[in-house]
Image (cartoon, rainbow, N blue to C red; front, side):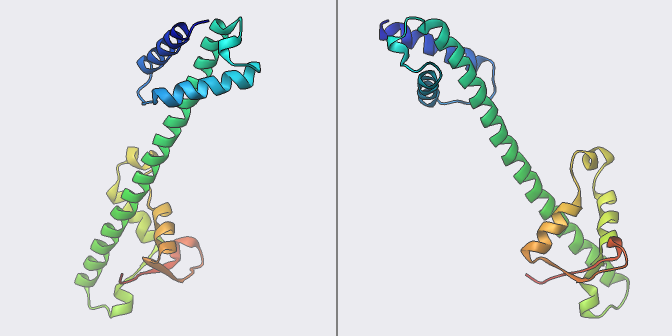
Length: 172
């Protein structure tokens, strides 16, 4: 086998992979992983294997699918992290508006003016998101737990049921 033929097969397989996916895979990484996987699967480098052409295509396809899958998972993870961050920011803003309205409705002393119940969060959730957004994962419960852990809110008192748990928005 000559290296020009090997490079042609690799280039063709890479171009075919890129034509059928929306994620970017680096050519150098791809060819390196295909070569390593080939050696693992067949115990010798493709350059000295008599059956290299069919085996190389099969290996390239397998490695390509795996790399695309890993890249999609990474993008999905990034998207989920961004969505969670957006939910936390939305919750912080929504709770601040809620507490401001609570103070404007009546004279409430300082510690109580910064307190809210879990059921208030659920009510704010219903008013903030559409039913479709809520079903697609827009919910404040996870964000409340994360913000409590990060120190933005503090659980002041546990109620008889979780909806009556009282939280306090801390000054940060």
